Length: 364
Image (cartoon, rainbow, N blue to C red; front, side, top):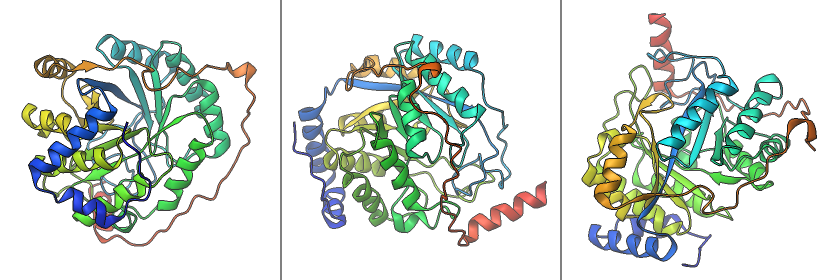
């Protein structure tokens, strides 16, 4: 195993990112092989259990209520619906189900209780369970852990500096505080970001500084390429190049050697050759299924064909960490506290977000 460094500087990460391409690829592949099986890839299925109607103004997100997109909203799915989707995912090779709800933050009540039951149900299927539900308090994180949650996703999205150019309704520190609350449990952390939102290379390095200096580092880090959706503030952004994706994956692998680096949104724009380079550079996790919350994703059969071609095998569940025990609701040590935490609302003005909001109002 490589020693994990927690004091990376932005300049050190920039020096890695800007290495000659072949040298960068070789170094990343070497680090990858020291810490992981290079022929094993963790496969996750992302399921939107509650779509649309979010109060946030994230510039990349079609689920924001203030923008006009073609996304059809839906109320929270039932436990049985989620179980059926989980079984389908398991049958096609996924070891993890990631449930996403378009919430700003978790609120105690019937809906959260329903999500806890979903976590119990999927864990009993011997699958890893991940949730991305927005900000959570320490008590809410403990309730999720008790239900059998394996991982909690809360992306930093970008550097702290560029974050202010994308989101005005939620503070960067709130994201870090949520990760800290999850760390007070036995739940693993999944946190990454998006490239191609108009940020510069320094911002990409800044995001990796924020992630790599966490101790421990996230067990999983998704690297997303922006999928520009019509109606969102970032609808006119050009697709990020495969060379930038490979560089970002390789740099992430070097500075976060033990983390599972997930090739996430944007794979429909990548050739198999491009994805193969990402795997060689250290990506060892993907999202499978034809949709990532609301954006397109390669068909699972296409992914399995690619795995066969490259000699890759899906990772078995609970390879990295033992399966958590599920505590039934009636035996729960923790109860709803009816908390009303004061998550921040910076509410500074982002011109392109305001323009997209005004355009949506005119259409409606």
